Image (cartoon, rainbow, N blue to C red; front, side):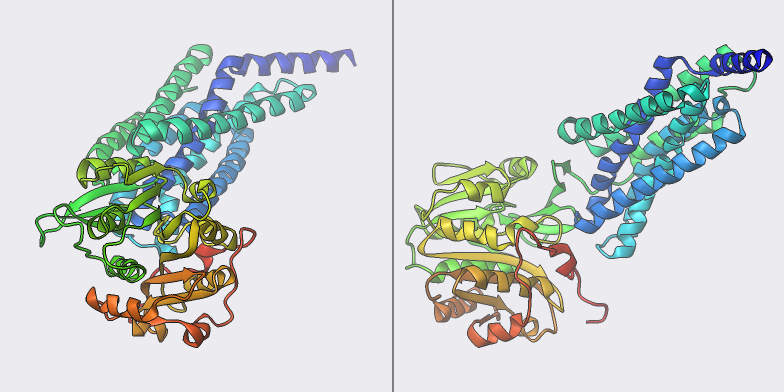
Length: 516
């Protein structure tokens, strides 16, 4: 027995001699785990300019990140049992950090070929953005655990401590990235910074291991260092669609080559707003003209209104109302402060007592609205290709109804394509709150042959349908007004959306079918 105990003690001493210093093990585990979470958050913003921000893009990035963590941890543990982890930790950190940098040009070059919200493009870009570097970095913590295990008696404490440290690294990276880094740095800067720090720490760990053990332990192949340098250089020249990265979007303002004073606000993949800097009554987009037609028909010409706008974009409708109905009071609820800044600096938005902008989520702003004050509520908030789900439900529409006067009108921009499941569900939801609902759309949309933007109108009082139809024609639109039995037939058996169940992204068909 004594001989056995002495042998075990000697074995434990040998293991301890190969272990990393505790503080180094903590730093390596914390950093590699945190870097993966930085990639997950930044990866979503990286692919958004090409495939938009939808539930599917969020799901793809999170799913691939989790898959990469699982595969990396599994393979890292298996390799740690087959070879000396001290030979692999530094190279894996350098390779993972180098690829964190390299995904930036890879996604930007690939994004030019994979633009669109179809599932294939979303999945491919999400995979490019996170899988390989996340897997490499996730292989490091199991190797650190293997080095730190001196005896079976310490397995629980060592594994638990390092697992906790890795989780804390992920938590810290999540909050730091979401609350601070995204607000201060562009996505490119976040990824390059994270990758470079990981590479440098990997090199330092390699130097430490070589000094402690000698031989080939801790050696980092020069090719990996060249990869880090090459990735950084490519990141500097990779094409970017962003003029500015806001808190939510890749945004830019594009001049209209056919209209000297025309400007288009691009958010990710969408032409979000059109503003004529010289003429606020010029309305380029058809759906905006349809909304304007409703506002023209709901009150005598020139009469000022009290309006609440859910979603700001380029503030096209508030400017229109200010021009055609002097004295109109508009409050714009816009969640993205970067969009508001672009409105002010590049799209000529001038705020006043009559045109105010509040940076807040529209649902939160609705809940704070005093009851019965608004003649008009305009819904034009979009997250990617869809209306944010929290603005589509019965509960949200009840807040809209509460904000309106007794004869106030709600008008909302929606988008869908056949079979129009989302639009039909939203119309059914509107009918659950408002007794009078109409849909403004083309004949092809009403016949189920086409899709795109449509405009829903709702009120507690009968709508001026004939006046709205005439106003549509005045705005050079061939759209029709569907109400009553025609609308009932269009809605069919669509479900009513609630806060408990509003699968907006699943109902939405973002693009027309090929050949349609």
